[in-house]
Image (cartoon, rainbow, N blue to C red; front, side):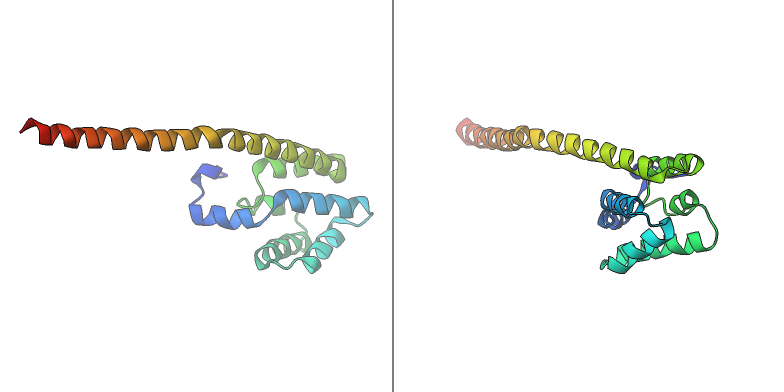
Length: 154
């Protein structure tokens, strides 16, 4: 049974964030469109990668493929880096033998999701600042009012 992202401890989330699934998908798509096989494309990505974390992930994927496992199966074994949606897309593309088209749809979907997420975050910054500053000012006013009330009651 796969864990949801809410069940993932914070220290594992930071590791997963260092691996950019969108960048991986875009680069893999470009290499597949250039005519490379999946193994050749992953080897090229491994050779050019400088991040040790990403190199370990790509090595694990290549090792799984060399053992004869399906690409989707290898990805599902690394659930902290490859979400269920991505694994499902790869699994569906294995039956249709059209991984590049599926990757292109995933890249487009992920870019749209990222754009919406960024819009939401940027539109919430100003109200949060107002809430924090307004709440702080209001609380300070109440505290000082309470202190004056206390000393004036004598």
